[in-house]
Image: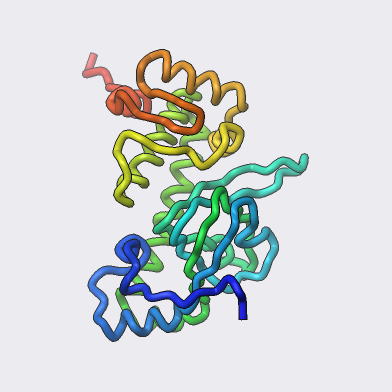
Length: 241
């Protein structure tokens, strides 16, 4: 028995609407709870899973923040994503039955363990669950396309603006402020994810602060002008000439 494993009840979880399908019957919810049997604590700085490890479960993040990363050829970590409470992590392992990245807790975290073979089996019987799994996978594909577009065509200011807007939007869906956030990741990790050097990230944060778009105190960020950030990501187009 894993000493960090804790019995879980999805029906009483305040994040249920974020990581579980809506409209489940009580009977279906009970069946899912039997599958999602345990929670696992993941202390800050430790791995939830490693690149190359056999894949056997998806993880619904209950509390905390994670980064996923892969090691580049020169040994540096390339951050591929940041995941927060209410999101599902581990989808990378479905294709080859092995994880293709590392998942590291950026703060003390807790996850609900969902054995994939049981989820797959149950989703064949509970249509809402099957639809939800497909939706989660589709969301991941859309996110990856967004990252590729961002890295391919956006300037540094546009990348950081898009990152901050996305982060605050996801946090707001979890009941947090629409204008304030605490960054769980370092400037270096943000740079790795956005394809920017650390100096460029720091310089862009300073420029946003000078332009009164944001207010920054260490890792605490307050967005003062959301419209200015949105204008950077979606600049107004000119009318017909």
